[in-house]
Length: 379
Image (tube, rainbow, N blue to C red):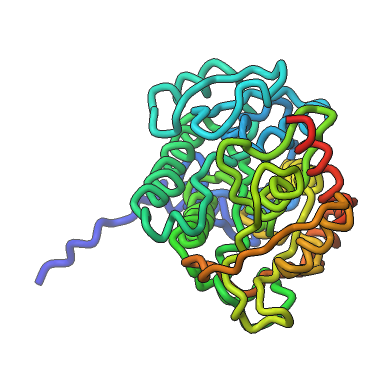
């Protein structure tokens, strides 16, 4: 059988000899980056690998869902920190007035043409992603809506970022990714077994971010926060008045005389008083954690996950007692059946974010209730 291996020309052999004489440590063939394939001598490779890279400053932030409860507080903290902010919100749950004089683009994440236009025109450096459907109980009965909005529409956002060369994203995730864990407080390496489609949708998107980092160089920090609460009444920022599902504003509605009683969903959980236990974090502390994540991400590559919480849990009945103390009003209670998809206990281990970011929660439960009550009496 004839030998079909092509012969190496004398000139090629001569060139290779000279190359190896010039680079006795050999060569490295890379298959990552641009150009996709390259051959470099080892000394050059080491220099490129170890040299300090210049990171472009982050100035303009696109905040999706920036007219909503948490997003609007983040917009305020971003602007106080010197960032330019562009808010992208469909106003289905957000309030136009909550963004102040920041630029507001009214649009849905499903509108791919509008997303592309925004990234082309606004010179976005990074994204803070809050836009999502967030009701855990509702997600059990409407899973398709949650996966469409939180996953599919989120992919449209990521694809628009990749196309525009925007490589930094802070993702507002949720402690709902953990489900009903057996060990407390909950650390980032705890098993994730969501108890509802809402938590599942957040976990799926976190996984997508990991692969987008590897494939496209889109780097991210996901913040798994626990129960956001509190308000910034002086700035007119607070809960969504039309459909308040959070425990604290619902109890305050009773204290204000707007409702006759508070409905407690289940008193048969494996907790000291039988009601759910949650880690409540002030929304301003949470907003500051998002800004700290953005600053950390400016010089970091990869996809990271951090818990944001206080490490202290309170039961539903403990929260009701604390609200009675702050407001001076009695709160009648009606116990009902459990809500679908409600874990018994969620308390954060936030050691990692405190150690790596230098972030600390500044508000306790009393401060959360007091600021919520101030807002409640204004609206």
